[in-house]
Length: 180
Image 1 (cartoon, rainbow, N blue to C red):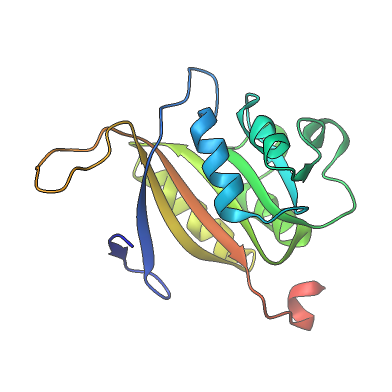
Image 2 (spheres, rainbow, N blue to C red):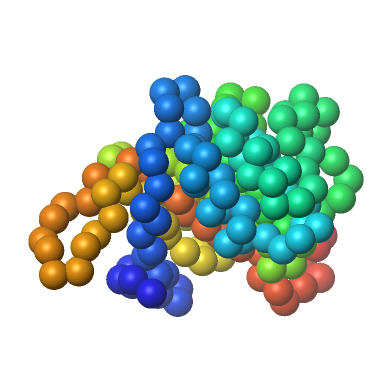
């Protein structure tokens, strides 16, 4: 399962051994595949707000549905999604973090997730993400660290962490206030 960080409730940390993304891209192909397979079911809709084709490839290969890259150009569509994937920091046209996560809340199915991918190293970004998501009514679900070298049993080595993935979710409990 991994370590646990304080949260409300505590949040598990998981290590995924996947390659680092190329310069200018949000994720590697391996990361796209893991996100799609771990956070969606067949026929689920995925909103792709990432840079690069990796998530689109994973969506197609896993027979999921998506607005793919058109999501940025024509809006996020009318249908609610099971997963929204984005990089961080946000593009200027995404609005403030609070506005972005409010829009995510409105576009997610109950139980749906937003996966926010951040380059590892800036300790302020994860805090900014969690605070803005919580203000929009989303709950902090999981922290995934992506590393090039997976840990090995019985050997002490440091991980080569390149990406933090913060997963927030829309509660399965629907309230009148949250849907207004």
